[in-house]
Length: 375
Image (cartoon, rainbow, N blue to C red; front, side):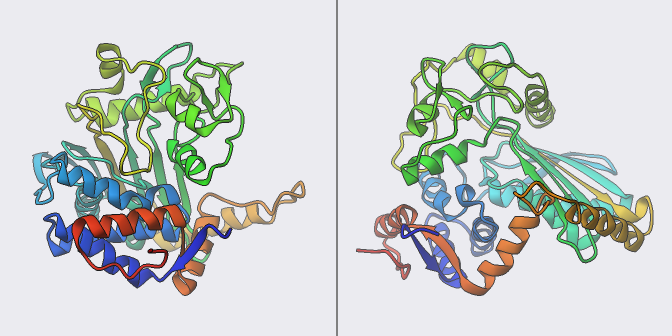
């Protein structure tokens, strides 16, 4: 890490996060759940979805865009499916609640599938898929977002970055953990570049004039491309995946889809989108995301121990592959798993700008803040 980072103890962050959420009306249980999701993201190196998001969520609660006392409830149910209404609650809490019920249902039926409506940003979606691992289950999660990414051959924002995640248990190897945006890059990566004052690679984003840019601020004000596409070469694959996620998360739940919103209320080029800075103005009518979760019991297919041994063998074979000098060969989730182990021992590095925002939040809420970096 650079000089712009300070290491913070996990327990210090946990205490502050819980106090902040409780101060805006969340129950102690929900405040603990939400804080744990943010900390787990930081532990795994997902800086864009960790404690840097706390001021943003609190701001949205204070503006009554999120219900701090929400009570998610089941609207429709079959033996293997759930439709959950999130009661406008914080996505971190509603998603945890839903995935846990999905797992409980899968224990009885072998698999379960849950769709969620009327909630908010879910954070690092892979963390919910990972909740299935302790139960020898495969977890699948996806979430939709507001228009940010152009459709193939399109000239305006039409779909979200729409991440999807799959977690598969193993025996001794780090579990397989795929968590990916369906755009060329997750928007949070560009936000982080803005915070760090660093350029972005060419091909990550288009500027407001539709031209490739390495300026992260112009990239945020412009559009993103679907996964697999470049400014010179169109690809339908990321576009198809993003649309699939929107259909699962928005249309299946009865929520407004991103393409419908984009066509009815197109965002003009150059109009800023969400940035990590909590002072960034919120849109008049924020996009309301839906989510989709699934849990599959491994022993519905074969004994769990045999399956996990097979996963180990597969992952180990990849790790043993010859590499081109940039290796060794990794599998999805390796780096995050090792980083989490290290940060649980030594603490979490947070950027000084993130710490500044947390100290400012403490002053606004009039709560104690014992984090480093304060004035």
